[in-house]
Every structure is written in structure tokens, then in C-alpha cells.
Length: 136
Image 1: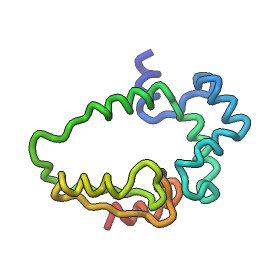
Image 2: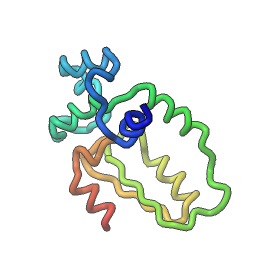
Image 3: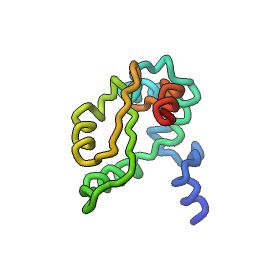
């Protein structure tokens, strides 16, 4: 039990039988890729395997738990004294320029790169641009 739990949270793909029935049905029908559309600016640019894996790795309960934890986060009590990089897609529907401005005010070493033509999952759409941003 502990090994299975640890593997699932280490990014391992959940066996298809363990996904919620709704996600299994959406994945089989191809509808999950359509529903994930807001995450990608250009779904056609995304490797089809990424969309299949997205369905396999989606765990709604874990997502809700993470969102609740994030809502409780507070600003650091002391200064952040390291470089912080943010890479986001130009057409990200969830994270915008206002988020970057707030981080830049709070973190002196903050640097943002906006990837042209990418959505929320810029790494899946424009992997070379994201890697260049992180190495640059």
C-alpha cells in the first residue's frame, strides 16, 4: 500500500483501472483531449502521447487537495534570496502578467519568460523554448 501510494505521488502513471470511471470513459472517447483544450494554446502542437498520459495521470482528488493547500500559502516571512524563474505560455489562461508583477515585487531575483504561442502547459507545446528559458 505504501509503495503504491509513493509511486503514484512520484509521478508514476496510475493504472487505467485505478482512474475514476468518468476519466476512463473520457479518455477512451477522446473527449478528455478536447476538455483539456484550455490548458493548451495549440493542442495540435502537443504530442498525442502527452494527451493520453494527461488522462492517465489526472487525479481530481489530488488536484483539489493541492489547490486547497495552495490557497493557504502565505508569503515568506523573510526575504527570498535566490533567483526565481517563471516560464509561462503567452496564452496561459490561468497565470498572467499580474501574477508575474506581484512576484517581481515580492522576490528581488524574480525573472519571467513568456513563451510565444503556448498555453498553460508550455513545456508540452514548446519544450525547446522552455528549456532555453531555463538555461538562459
